[in-house]
Image (cartoon, rainbow, N blue to C red; front, side):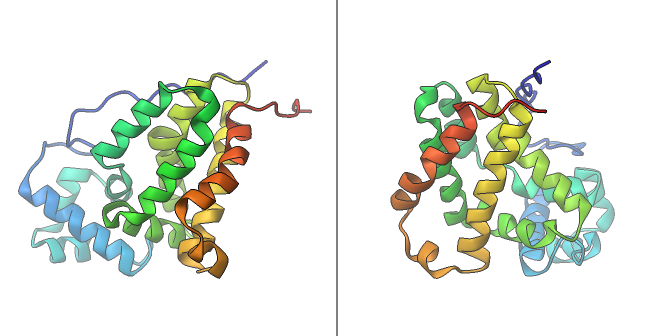
Length: 212
């Protein structure tokens, strides 16, 4: 029996990520900004809610009031900016034959923007040592970025396809932005898109071996 494609994530009200109990507020924005900086300076495990609250100038209880837990706060720092969510929405309506290159280009663009690149770098450093960070990473790729694209393509083994795409993109990001592998650092975005896009395209729409 084939796996059922991951459902598109249910729409959320603006400014209310998982764990949030109130809407947008200046304090919430300060908490998010402080969390991005704190996670970027350390790892998920070493960053505390108390330190984030102190930098934001609020009580730690207010952090939990807005986000519910450190994991939910970390996930909120990873959420795609509005303009990139709109690009994903446009991508899932585009021709499936071109999705690989578009997805790689969009992913590389995330690392160029401080608002997304900084927490992503923190996540990469944390994911191998902390299960909450690993779970937040999986949620990010499944709900925010790769999952909707795989679902739009409508092919078999969707969860394997998500994992294949995620592993390839994470390997690229780790080598380029964390390890600083020189040829990847020097390569411009469009060159990398041309090299990697066809591989990601196969993961999205190409035939996969039948599971044993």
